[in-house]
Length: 174
Image (cartoon, rainbow, N blue to C red):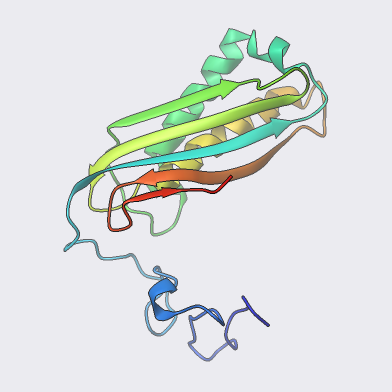
């Protein structure tokens, strides 16, 4: 079956149909978890942008007028980015240069967009930090909104853009 794992217990870490260049980087040849060695990687400026949406039955514009809630959600997201390495196993501890979290209502109705941008000069990427900031910001909003709509949810959290490192610039196709 395409995209499935190799047989359990064989030490296989390859995904069927995926080339060696696209292997899972946090597994060694025997399939054991390992931290990626970034010793030889150059220190470069890196940027990552993650986006997500909080959706539900609420008036997004009214929610975003609650400045204390917006500030609390943005600060929680920024703080979470700073400890992504502590939350995600084998994620490198890095010293972020900047974290910017924005929340907005793209239209009337029950949608709040969350966007987190993280920046670093390091030998490793900053994608997990952006994704963590976006996720936690959204979860703080969901926590508050659950009183207005118990079905409020965080959806579509994804990396949208990254700059720096070996791959240069990558942008998600819309």
